[in-house]
Amino acid sequence: MTYVVTQVCYDCKYTDCVEVCPVDCFYEDEHMLYIHPDECIDCDACVPECPIEAIFPEDEVPDRWKDDIQLNAEKAPECENITEKKEALAGKTDRDCKKASEYD
Image 1 (tube, rainbow, N blue to C red):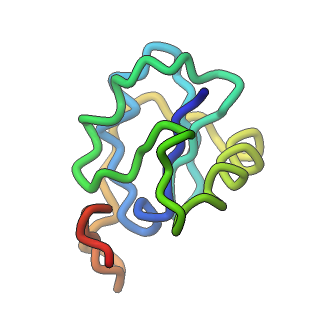
Image 2: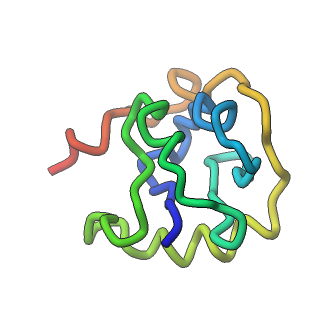
């Protein structure tokens, strides 16, 4: 099993999670973060760090974001590795950054 960053992260892109990852398995593009499924060691350290609850264990990803499992697997190898916290996109885009639990 691996962890998955869901579309909840899109254009919010808080990076608190990357600092606690012991194996540096986070990758980023201009819109969101991804977890490389072959690098994640399932430690769960990133989950409580995400202020918008965008990260889930693969087998617990809500149905509305199931496609994000494959998205992480495809995008992570194509993107730049991120290991240090950066300024979030939240508040800089038109997107309303709400927690995953606040979606209908």
